[in-house]
Image 1 (tube, one colour):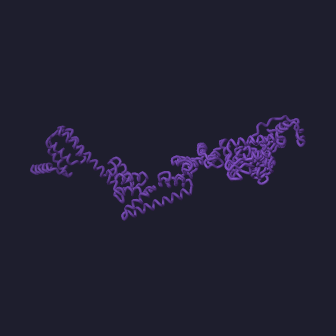
Image 2 (image 1 turned 90 degrees about the horizontal axis):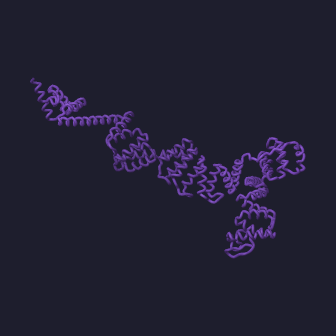
Image 3 (image 1 turned 180 degrees about the horizontal axis):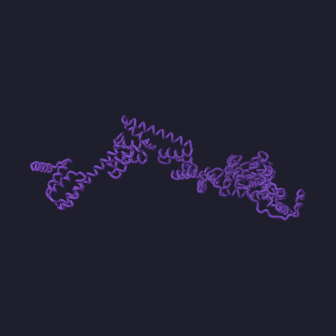
Length: 584
C-alpha cells in the first residue's frame, strides 16, 4: 500500500506517480525507513506480493538494493507477474549505480536482444568484481579466441572454488591453451577438487605422478587497457553513468587521460551531478602531468564564464601551457580571445602574432584569420594616406586603426600626424613615442626622424649621444639628411665647447693668470674661434704673460678677421696695424 501526501490516496502502488492526482510520490526518509521495515516483515512471513510491492516503491524512489531485489522478483515471478523486460529495466537502474550483481543479471537478460549490450555489461560486472560473471565471461572470451584473457577469468572463478572453472583451467594448462603447457599448474588445480568430475578423470590419472606447483595470484594481461576499451564502448552505447564510473576507475589508477575526461564529465554534469570544484581539481591534476588537452578544457571553462567567473589571465595561462605541450591550435584560440576583446582589451596586433605562430604549426584556420586581418590593416593604411590631404580627420582614424592592428608602416605615419597636426592636435610627445615604436618594430624608414627627436628635442629632451647613435644608423642605411644632421650637431658641439673654453680663458685674464689663459686661447686658435684668436693677439700685442710681439699679434688679428670676427675695436686695431706696416 502507498499513501499520497498530496491528495490522500491510499491504495495499491502502480508506479512512481499517484494514480489519483498524477503527482510523483516523494517519500520522506522516515517513510522509506518504514517501508524497509514492512518489507523485512513481509519477507519473514513469506508474503512475497507485499514484499514485491514494497521493493517496487523503494526501487522507484532510487534505492539500489530494492531495484536489484525487485528486478530479481520480476525475473523469477516471485510475488509479482514474471516480466523480463521490466526486470531488465530495474537491473539497469542498479547497474548504473555500480551494483555488480545487477550488471551481471542485466547482461544475462540482454542476451535475448543484443549480444553487444550483453557482452558489455558482462565485462562491466566482472570489472566491478562480480564473481558470478567470471566463468560466463571466460567462456565468451574463449569462444572469441581471447584465450589469455579467458584464462585470467577462469583463474578468478577458480579462486572461488567453481568446479567447472577449476577443471577447465586445469585442462588449459595441461594442453597449453592460452598459455604455455604447465603440468604442475594443471596438477595444482586438479588437487583443489576432492573428487574430479567424470570428464576429468582421465586427465587426473595422467597427472598422478606430477608434483603440483601453485600458479600464484592470477594477473590480468592489461587491466587498464580493458577498462579503456569498456569506457569507449560505454560512451558509444550511451551508457553515460557506466562511462563516468569507468573513467573514475581509470582515474584512480592514475590514467591522466581518463582523469581529464572525468573532470569534463563533472563540469558538464554528465553521468553525475555537476561539480565544478571537482572538475577543476581533476583537470588540474591531469594537466600537471603533461596533459595538454586538460589545459585546453580548463582554458575553455575560464573563458566561457558559465561555470566559473570568466578569468582571462587563467584562461590564457592554460591555453599557453596547452600550446607549449604540443596542442598548437591553442594559439588560434588565444588569437581569437585578443581579436574579439570580450574578456581582455581588444588587441588585434597580438591576435595576429598568435595566429602567425599557429599558422607556422600548420593550422589553416589560424593562417586564414591572420591573412584576413593583415589585408584589412594594409587597406586601412592606404586609405589613411590617400585621405590625408582631403579629409585629415578620417585619415587619422584609418591610420589609428591600422596601427592598432600592428601594421608597422602606420606607426611612423601616426608619428607624423601628431608632429604636423594631420587630423589631430599637434602633440610632440606622442610623435616621439610613435617614432620610437616604429623603430623598435623594425621600420628603418623611421630611424632618421626618430634621431631628429633627440637632436631637436622633439617630444623628448635633447640628447647628443642618442641623436648621433640613431642618426649614424640612418647614415649607414644611406640617409643623406641624417649625415647633414650629424654634421650640424658636431658643429654646434664644437662651437659650444669653444664658447666654454673662451669664457674660461677670459675668467683667467680677469684674474691676471695670463699664462693659463694663453693655453686656452691657443685651443681657440687651433679650432678657429675668431674672438679667441683676436684675444690671443691682444696678449701678444701688449705682452700680457708673454713677450710683446706685434708681428704675431698682427697675424692673429688677420686670422680672426678672415674668420669673420668683426668687433669694432678689432677692426680699428687691425686697420692701424696694417697702416703701420705700410709706412714702415
